[in-house]
Length: 116
Image (cartoon, rainbow, N blue to C red; front, side, top):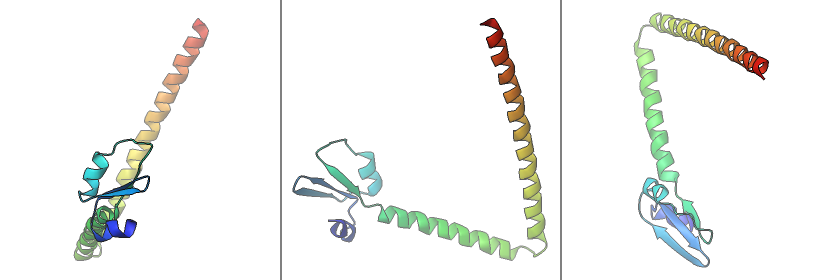
């Protein structure tokens, strides 16, 4: 049934006992219209959806590689270093914020304990 579903480019098929029903809609449409039925088993043909997603990611990665290659050899490392500095600064700021929130929570818990 899985091979037939893939070959026919169906979005899904449902097995109910000894009956199989194929759905020619897109996988996303089949997923959106799923109904819980303990007497049925649904198989989603996610292969086309996954292939489309991988294709998009591959195109994005290739365009980024081309962009990096086209930029000057010295500019790319500087840009990466600047991005690293920026991310490090953000990380430090987040760490400080978390620490301040933990101290505030500790103070609130101590105050609550004293009241009880």
